[in-house]
Image (cartoon, rainbow, N blue to C red):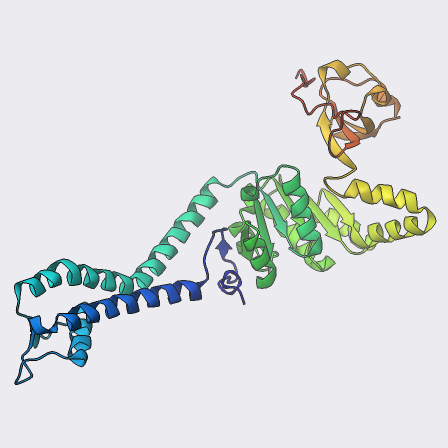
Length: 362
């Protein structure tokens, strides 16, 4: 199991960070330590005539003695039974072996220090994140629907740093963490878990849990913590839509009915189904988008604009393009349009070139 997955515990916030394999890091440090030890042994053995063994009647130093001396010297034990007697051996100890000893000790305690520093740094990053995070998006559930929702958000300009994933599955959250998202593992119906995700300051909450009863509980809890957040929830069954709306969701999408309708359209009219699939696929062909009204479009009919206008947002209500209320566009209106996903010379995308906007005079 990946390290990023194994370290996730219930209710813990985990911010994205680039890490290397702990086994790779351990192996690297072990090889460096062995290299330092062997280098010290070699220095002592090659210059063994400059050392004296107080425990040997002849005072000679052999290979075993060199290994012993290197070990006790690098570990700062220093029993003093083997000592350098020549000037150059003492200089080698002062200017070569002493730095090797320091490096060896730093390497031995480095792992402990790094763990403490990493933990402190992680706590600091989490505290700073909670302090600065607001107007972000919380996505509850990182299954197929949740991943698609997150991909759509990112593809439409939402910064990954402003998306938080909540899911009880360590495997799903490991994937989200590897993708560069902040993650919180735990049950989204629990207040403490949602607080760790910063739901109280969130601008929007997307709920895509696999069970409708869990969706209802999560929606109720989110709405209690944040009365102002815009909540979008996905349910499996149409019968549960009213219940989720009563729980506080602003918008409810029925996944099973939507898939069923698309399958039915595919059998009745394959071209129509292909167009709908095109509209739902980001980055190619057509896309459905919301944009502001331009100054040059004020007073015009929706049907006369270069974009294919399908709805007009006015006074927080949605009007279809053919309704009498919106036969003339006014300042403050917003448009729901079908347009090319990528601009072509023969297919412009008004509102994407810094044009003057017809903002609401109020």
